[in-house]
Length: 180
Image 1: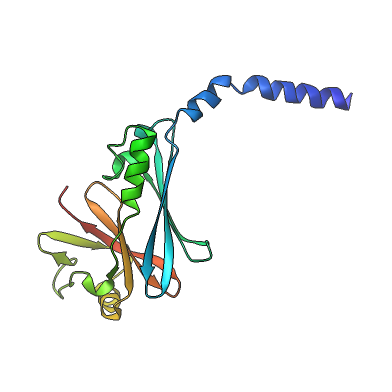
Image 2: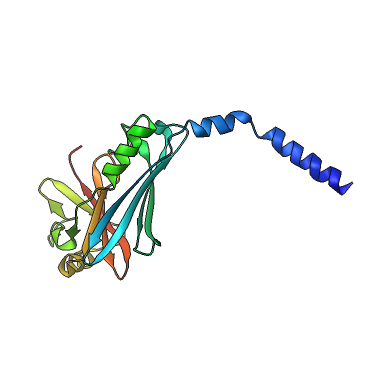
């Protein structure tokens, strides 16, 4: 009797899984690109992937890995909300876009705009910098003064997410707006 119940459960599970689901997934927007970023003598892997039923509805991930391959930062974004990814309409175009997404310039936190004592936030020309929630002016200015390695990547339609490298890990210092 037990064998019949197991066989019946397996048959029921197979019947409940539509065959079309496999076809939809294979026609999706699964793409990947890998870049690198160097800070001092350390090199980090920047991995970008998308997955979704099509590129218009894909989710993009941005992952930073240390030299051992361990992930030390990861963020997921709706591809349609990321300037670099939003126009890719097929897997080949998305792979190209992901390659561009993982191409970042080496920077340091001393390049962040100054946060004047009487200002609500730091400003660089006409484009404000929005510190990460919980970061006050004193913390922000300390990060600037420490001249830490900084990686900024496009995270929206008109902004960069800036990460500082400190004690072997990345933390978001905030978002830099730019003209879109």
